[in-house]
Length: 234
Ligand code: PGA
Image 1 (tube, protein in one colour):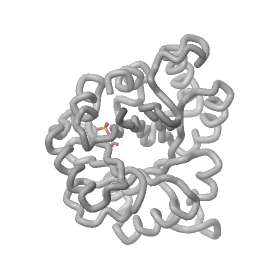
Image 2 (tube, helix red, strand yellow):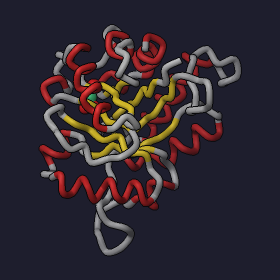
Image 3 (tube, protein in one colour):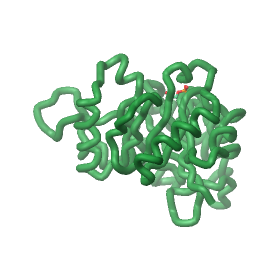
């Protein structure tokens, strides 16, 4: 069975109270009151299981979400949305790899919203990837499709064409498949996911493409019912 990564990117949304409410509702709609009797084919990445659920919340939510997930043994993995290009030190406002590693397994690097709003350059992204590698965080490296150099050797590449992000106009599954093949041709070790206006209605069009190993979901992941439906339909 093909492994799928269903990744939620919460961007700059949700307070701690809202995040815990999301987890409670997600837990209730998928597992009843407890994760015993798992109704979803989801996993924490174990052998033979096919869907890994990764939530990338704002960094303030990593600790309380980690606590809730552990306490209720939910099959959810956490990721950060950003990482400092520096190690610990005099870098006011930065969150470094060692700090992220306490709570998360993944880190999104190079999202177009960071490239556009915070002037993140390829040179900077290379440093961020190096920090992710140093702390054994798995990068979810975002590309727009025109890149020739992907900058990571292992991990996940998210193909997210800018025009498809938050627009309600996803790219075609065929385009996504073509990009995925192009990336895999250069590096077969990378898993390619698609992102940009993914919903429960269209998710399967992408995940059924042979070279696509999941989705990166923004807006539609903020609602626990819709996100649960995306997991079911993927
Ligand atoms: P969207 O965002 O699902 O809201 O289009 C995707 C992303 O930016 O990761």
